[in-house]
Amino acid sequence: MVQDSGDLARVEACQAIYSAASSARVNWVKSSGLAVGDWWQASSLPPALQTIQWSTGPLVYLGVYLSATHPSPPENWENLEGGVIEQLRKWTGLLRCLSLRGRALVPNQLVLSKLWYRLNTLVPAPGFLTNLRTSILEFFWSGMHCAPLGILHLALKEGGQGLKCLHTQVCVFRLQALQRLLYSAGSSAWSILAHAILRRIRGLRYDWQLFYLCPGGLP
Image 1: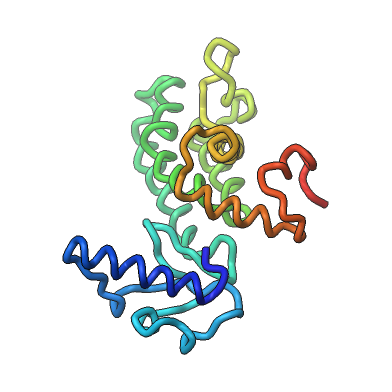
Image 2: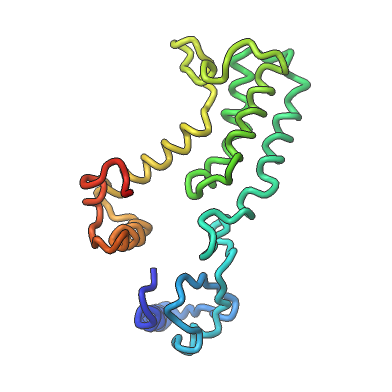
């Protein structure tokens, strides 16, 4: 997270030291940067960093689209819902051969796993999870609903089928990230950015203390 142009100057200096030690160089011309905020101008950057293709996004990073103007760019969700529904459709011809447990394993293991990476890092588009929830229910019962979807989410020993709940899974991802931030012995690379963002909330300059001061969230 860059606070001012001085941070970028230090980035260039660190890269120069790395290049001298490893004989490897960064091709800045082929690099892309996400410009967040309006405090800087490209002309004020160090010469090497001026050649980066700066934009406000969307920019692809590790398979995810990032944007300085949108918390969850729609490019991340385009065609994803259709892809999941299409995969479920391919299994409809085998439904008569599958037990209820088998019908739960198809979305759990073979279909929904493609969603976990993006749901772990991004806020889903409005209606995205609700639409998929309906499609999964239609697939499981093949048009003949015998029980609410909430019952299917229960564990086998509780009378359910262990079908994963998308909304619950998103909450699990958020709690796991919070647990790593607050209680992890090692400092993850992303935690540095997370702590910097927390300190800027309402100008309070607090960090992890916010979760204890306002457990219900800031108004």
